[in-house]
Length: 136
Image (cartoon, rainbow, N blue to C red):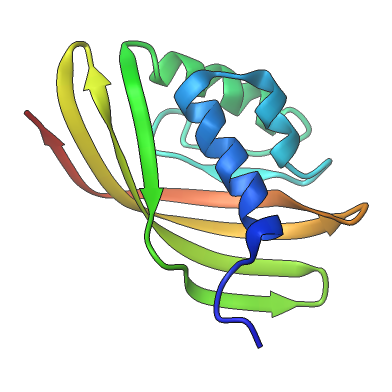
């Protein structure tokens, strides 16, 4: 029995992090084909419905304006659970980069629900919560 997500489960998570850092729309393939729900720390905060991913992507790009050199690291997964074709886990996450020229660091927790679609894990839902923010 595994105690955490394997590389195939982490792939869509890494794609979403790459989208946040770069705005590369090809990374949006990380999301499930339907029923996606995203909880974020920017308005409108909750993204649901058939166009949830498109609306989130648009707002994330707006939210990330002025950010440069964005990088992330993950701590060990917590609360890892597999049930049928679904996986849940939480990731301690650290982001760093520059915001309008100032160095910043942000820590938080990212809870993911993945579903298997056509043999691949896809993100059906995630929620982000900031636990620490610092600017230098």
